[in-house]
Image (cartoon, rainbow, N blue to C red):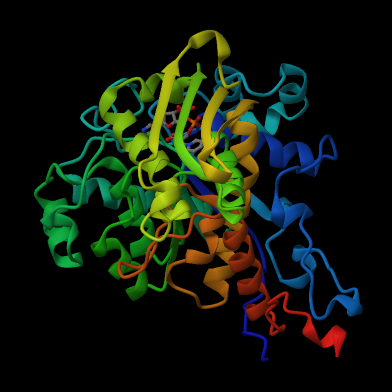
Length: 436
Ligand SMILES: NC(=O)c1ccc[n+]([C@@H]2O[C@H](COP(=O)([O-])OP(=O)(O)OC[C@H]3O[C@@H](n4cnc5c(N)ncnc54)[C@H](O)[C@@H]3O)[C@@H](O)[C@H]2O)c1
């Protein structure tokens, strides 16, 4: 197989973060701390992962970062927008994820990052309001202001390449509308400030129009509409989303494939969470929660395939709850009760209690997504990057396909894509040749 031509990762990579909240500040502080040797990048495939190449007998398992010219975290320059004026140090303190002792060791780097005024409208995030907001004559004007921020950042910081990741709050539930159907309809809707264009789409449009890769860490539609997918193809921008797969859903997509592999039936799956950070506060609004709920609920249907296994999964009761509970801050606690059915219909139960840290799980995967999107751009890949489904609860996918949610299939797809780019044989795990 031939190695795909990939442009080198020369110079600096600008990572544009929309929303400097818990996830973004934990990422930025983490990259700075790792760069100073204060901590390890645990949870990041690009930083710690290896990839097996060739036959098992060859013993070739280089680090992924050695296989490709991935951007080095030391070459990343962060910039971003938020509706609050706090610099990144203050925002990290507000988020309360990382210890003050760690933040104080990287304080100057964090203080230097001040959010640019945001495109924001309370219509789409009802529980928040802040002073650092752009004014414009219409949404097209706002998109142009975002592009101007990006261009200024690129010039002032001497950047070679850029990637944008929406790490802003979850917007209210929206479905596709005629304004999302084509680039022309979308641009007309920007001009008339159509209600069906929330703030996240304004940023996504500004990035994709410039050929900048775009990812969505939250469940709102954002770039997952025909107009922006078409624009991404036209400008050769890789895009990925939606909604980072971190706590409870990560566990669900690890456990469910295992139950199905053994053909154990599932009658019910009850998931509940308590969460006390700003994300939890935003999700306390029923319209934002609806966006999250849709994203969290779809995974079981696709993994368990009730249409193929009606006896096992046809009548599954799947319930997902998130309760805002301030004392917990970012330290979410999730409970899952799974009602299983075994041989001859005998019932069993499985209980999972995950005491996780939301942003500690999210930060490394935002880093991976940013670095892999930059790789995709340099490799000439454009449009939806389904191989990055591994990182998302609601993977963006082509309209004619169903999304793949099984985390093990997703990882296989990601690694086989890397092998393909490197001109290495794809791994099938067949291995019959060893027994000839
Ligand atoms: N932490 C996780 O594990 C995880 C997992 C999946 C998805 N997410 C999603 O990622 C997003 C970020 O999570 P978080 O915990 O950092 O939330 P957060 O509330 O701490 O941060 C979001 C930030 O975005 C800002 N913001 C909102 N609208 C904006 C806009 N239009 N422009 C600029 N800034 C804007 C807010 O002011 C806030 O500072 C949320 O949507 C969340 O649902 C997080």
